Image 1 (cartoon, rainbow, N blue to C red):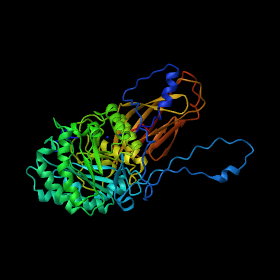
Image 2 (image 1 turned 90 degrees about the vertical axis):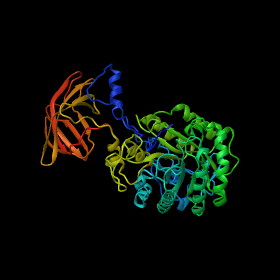
Image 3 (image 1 turned 180 degrees about the horizontal axis):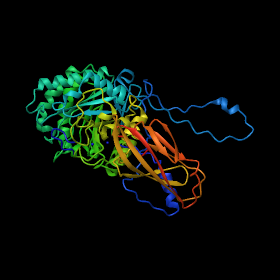
Length: 519
């Protein structure tokens, strides 16, 4: 799976199809237009997760209003839509408490399924700066995460079993648990075997590490132990079980009720092997890892089969790029994975907290911050994640704009815009210049009417940031934040079927990054 010495491991864009309706109408009359720099993929934010009020999770309830039944009206009213199911509150140690495993699920004391959703550090020896109290608090309050995974490499440079200071690494993990506890999050302590393939290779080091961790963390109800990250190579499930038979008792001696997660062969994909021969212990879960651009429908079906068959699975690591941790992003596959995990109440953790120049890193390479992150600091993967988690600390519209596909803002660039009437518009960046610290953009517009005649027209053009209108011609314009609405002037509202309208335009100003976006 992901080969990431010093980490190689990239994010979901939900799409809204605003332009799709207009395009469908055009197809209906047999028209196809090709315009330079056009992009027809649209983000959809209908599945945005929102953190609810902090409380013990309760089964969904559908509210009703009996008083409405007695109301009368002279004419029949349209049937009201069914109330949406309330969002389940975000689980947290202060309200949900210690977790355990029942059947295929991670549950609270009352047996209610609990879903953990969060992020993983990169290798603690390489990116220690992100393990700090302020940032962990942001992860909970702003990002909407309720779990953080502390990834401690075993065999790589700086690994616990190689050349690292084990005392220093132990202290860093303990600090991470302390910060997660203060932030009211769960924490996964991850023995991140990778290049050592078979976890038995460095079993002696794992035994030492978990003996110390379980001793020092025994009183922390929010700690979950992940005893092997990604068994790989020719490692079999029998090898993993033999390793687990040695490590689990070490943890149980100090922390008898802790949840323990066990990796599976082939970089934690072969969960069917664990389902066929599970470990005869309580509070055990099994690891599945995926990278959305590489692992798709077949592995999703494997997850469904395992969970519906009773296997408790925890996705302790995933990305929305290729399995290398880099390469292309597949938002559609990532969306499908998220939908499935939510449906099955499977917990998931996204890789990784770093500014490494790779697709799975959540921060841009030039971002040197360790806390206080703004949307502009986040990579595509980071933006996808705060959207997926519901990011209560970020304005939903700002997230949408940050993730929207941006049209070229270079002079000479062309793009399409769609109105609610029958006219399709082409916009051209006729000119661009800087003055008094602002950048000015001159847009020319030309419209073609492919349907019935119209006596008026209007088109709303979204930008990626707030704009100021400097001038316009042969049209009326109005601004609402980042949206510019262009309407007909007194003399050019009537456009016959098959006719065109032109010599329309406007000048707007903003930052140099100002651009038209697809929403």
